[in-house]
Image 1 (spheres, helix red, strand yellow):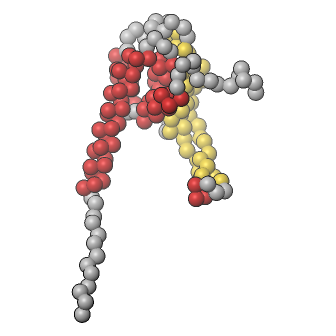
Image 2 (cartoon, rainbow, N blue to C red; image 1 turned 90 degrees about the vertical axis):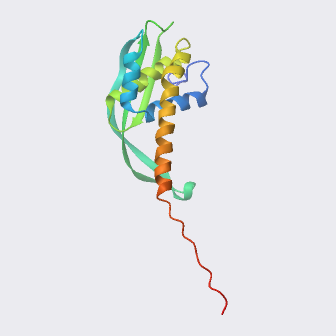
Image 3 (spheres, rainbow, N blue to C red; image 1 turned 90 degrees about the horizontal axis):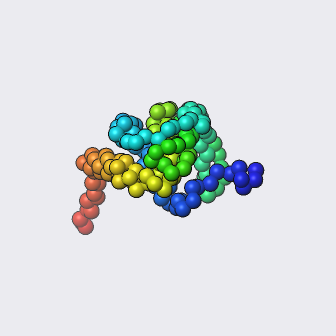
Length: 164
């Protein structure tokens, strides 16, 4: 493969920022993502490049985290790649998503928002109206789960015998 055929990040996009928004989109509630897309205006034209489709990936692990590799098992993954054109984009953008599970619409919507985030124009709006609220929803959900787990905490203590 030549460097011209390898996928690259859009110019000016930091890897950590993209990892952040891709994680947020992949872990988002599909209904919340759908509501964000329904409320989005103006919508760019969305052309499917690949998928959305579901398949299996082999999950590999290492013994002790750094030892010999072994196949742990298979996981279902949904993926999609879309091209966005038209308003509010100055030029065409491509968005991609991979997420655990088989929710094809979730994969398509995550790819659409990835494409909007990859373009310079609507990026700040997507962070403000989509990524920020989704991150807050996830944090609240995680806090609720943590509180629930803490409520079941059992403190085990040992009683020292007194000297005879």
